[in-house]
Amino acid sequence: MATEVQSFYKDKIVFLTGGSGFLGKVTIEKLLRTTEVRRIYVLLRSKRGQEMQERCAAWEKEPVFVNLMKINPDALKRVVPLGGDCQEPDLGLSIPDRQVLVDEVQIVLHSAATVRFVEPLHIALDVNTRATRLMIQLAKEMPRLEAFVHVSTAFSNCVLEHISERFYPENLTCPANKVLELHDSISPELLDKMTPALLGRFPNTYTYTKALAEQLVQQESGDLPLCIFRPGVIIASYREPMNGWIDNLYGPIAVLYGAAIGVLRITRLNLKADAGIVPVDYCVNMLIACAWHTARESRIKLPPEPPIYNFTPPKDNLITWGGFRDKAALLRYNFPLTQMMWIPFLHCTTTPWVFRFLACFYHLLPGYAIDLVLRLRGRKPRMIKLYDKIHKNIDILVPFVDTSWQFDTHNTHQLWSRMSAEDQKLYDFDLGSVDWDDYFLQALGGVRLYLGKEKPGPESLKRGRKIYRRFQLLHRILKLALCSGAAALLWSIFKRLFSLFI
Image (cartoon, rainbow, N blue to C red; front, side, top):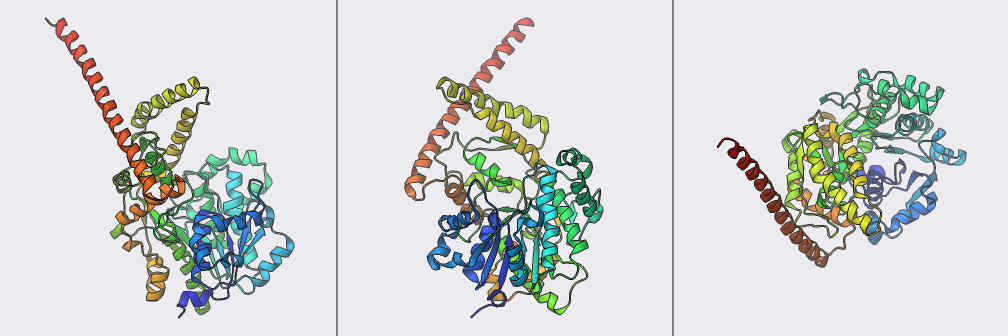
């Protein structure tokens, strides 16, 4: 028998942006596997020479859809790609496609975004802010619309340390509509030069443009049945569609992977700061529930402002960045990568000069040595370029791994309490029940399979452990040699000083 949430989605027409992204793919998979949606329209653009139909057809072979295809080989036929681009005027939609959306769509899930922290401001404004306005305008033309979920981020107001489930227009240096007017009236180059003045206290263009988008929702959503979903840092899945699924190297997963492969050995990280991480499958379950609850509440009474749902680990089940590092380190022998370049370990500091000093020894000296060997073998050097990129990314992430934010989650708890026991089981987003030890057991295995591209099975693990033990021995020999050399140097200095006083 269908649950309340499943009944709501039965025969519905959904329009999803960001469908080719990490969150979007898991959303599509979950909707197709657990509901009887009639159709999911997905906004897709051509990429790397692949047309949108080719990109959509290739999903059948992706790991995220493997289990779904076994259950229902025709499931993806309910997904209809529409050519478009959030960076283009009117979302790049053709007139016929736009009319199809207006006539048919009942649920809008707007998750498209550029998550690059260093994205030029004019691009981030196009994708994260202006596209939100265009989506709202499109939604207002949909007579059958029942729910619109705008996916923001828990860090859209990161200039504050205590973030409630409300709007914060006072954080902006300039109103969103004025910024978009400026965007349309000057050249992209000039706008990008104005970035520091416009950002104010915001650390990057991503959080800033997401904050602008929230203000647009507050000012322009009118009487739309709309809510804002603010997830934390989205990381590998816990259980669905499979344990530990991940397809990107963003944020903390990049740190974890870099350490696992033995390349990243020192980073800037506040081990005592809370890690606002959330498994992608829990995010998707919350997103699906948000649409159901928004439609349900809007039929009763439209709220004065769109409700906001913060989604981060609760106080009684927080995990720190130190816990993140330690849990990952404990599993390095269980899921070793066969491509590792050295034994995995990671030292952390919050002091910039200490990081730069240690990076010389842990990163640059080994990097120059490897590049020298590559040159002697007639190959192109790559390690110093890699470390330059790694160090820049570490600097970009500093604001998010050095601060603990407090998030109010009253609306999220209310939504959870209003779901039936059956829906809570089917669409579980209770972060208070997550066993982080078990989660990292699944996530590390997923990183090995889906990012490391390792072969599943005991043979690959056996080979990885053999390589791990070899590097462990070499690491101990190296430490012994360095300690012996340092001791010899100190002894030599001590003898010279002693001889001066005799």
